[in-house]
Image (cartoon, rainbow, N blue to C red; front, side, top):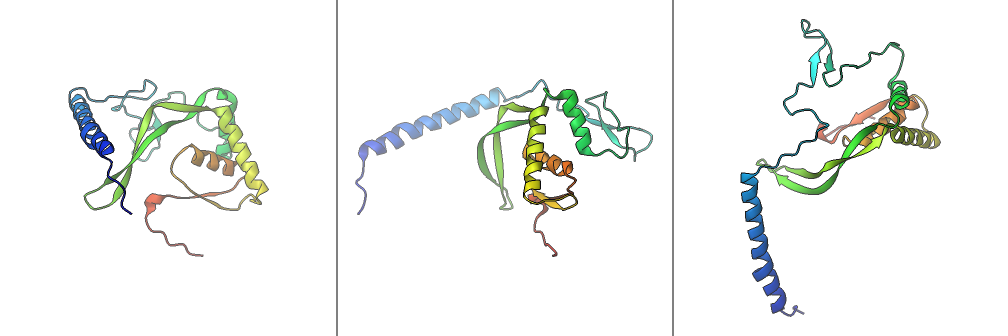
Length: 195
């Protein structure tokens, strides 16, 4: 049975709302041309800043180091591991913020000329930060959970996830219990596994 035509709904949608949204989008577009959107987080470096430099400018094979922190500490013990270094940071900076994320406002499909579809994320301008202490607790809880599931040192584990705080917490949890991490990324394309 066909739905009854609703004249009031038709007028409301197509005579009032659609032209209104069209006018608002035109105004928004014109304002965007005149006043370009510019978001600047004072805690982030300038977009033209050089973030890393060679430690030895005469040797192109020397390692790169961050230019954002002049007080970086080199590891004194070559036998240390990344989890031990993480715990040192937690002790020194336990209440400082680390692992900032921004809320996803919308996800839109962007079709490329070759037909591929990419997801375009619109993110909030404010970061939600987690402290070193909270990250440390999450790492320890996750590693204890992995142990309770039967994972043992030197077992291998695959992390297949987007780059985000949960990935880093998972990696540190594995490092804590000495489980080697194998990473896979969706950008690798088709994968063939040999078993």
